[in-house]
Length: 130
Image (tube, rainbow, N blue to C red; front, side, top):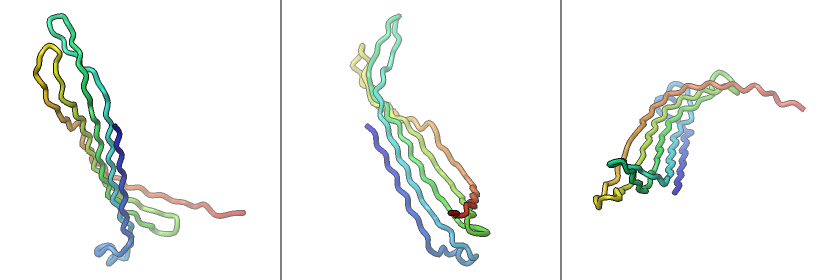
């Protein structure tokens, strides 16, 4: 099972604080959600014998980006400020050890939370020619 979601919202109008300073940035909100499911074998060692059982693991990535983008100084110069929040989660589905009848419940493991701040300046100086 694979699920992908991408959403991008842009706002290009007057922002109250920035507009009073003479700035007209583009504000963007980007949402990402990616999910992958994998079949796995789990091994249990008991009394010199190994038991195997099958289950599924689902990996989820959720990310939100907040972006301010503004042309500065002259045409072709752009400044971008970006904050990204990422959340990575793995879910192990329930399973039964072959020698028992006990159902072990599913578990959820949040194994990474990321926060990223980025400032990017780009300059394009390509002149049209024939």
